[in-house]
Structures are given as C-alpha cells and as structure tokens.
Length: 97
Image (cartoon, rainbow, N blue to C red):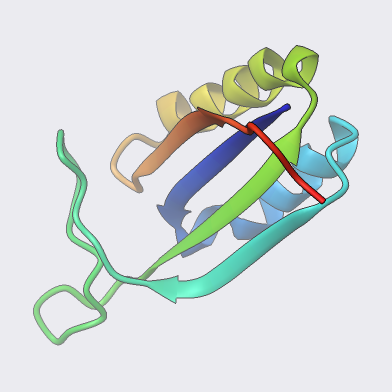
C-alpha cells in the first residue's frame, strides 16, 4: 500500500476528487485551505493581499498498482495548467489498522 500526498491550487479540487473516484481510490482526507510555495515554480499560495490564492491538499492511501494511474492523471492536469501549481508525493505505508 502507498500513500499519495497531493498539494494543489484550490481550482483543481473537484477534478482531483473526480479523478480519484474514477481510479477506484475511494478514501482520502482533504484540507481545503493550506498555505505554501512550490520549490520549483509557480505562484505562492498565502491567502494574503499580495498573494491571495490558497492551496488545498489531499492524502489518499491506495494499492501499489493504482499509483501510476493516479500520478499520470495528476501530471496531465499539471501540464495543462502549470501556473496553478500541483505536486504529488508517494510514501510507503508500512502498517495500518
């Protein structure tokens, strides 16, 4: 099992949730308003006067064979609109209850 942490501009939220559902990734936890700045490019998401946009984040736990499907779909979204900002990170899940 793997964990996928996804940080993204709020504009992606519905698309990401829909993609997870279509990829048979039922469970996830979402944070609607998070602040941050990407390490490569894109605009900061601080929710301030100077940088008014906000980011969101989702963490989902999926079977190993679903990881590539999810990452490929996320990558396609990011390539479509690179200025919005979208990043995903995968971790091994050693144990769950």
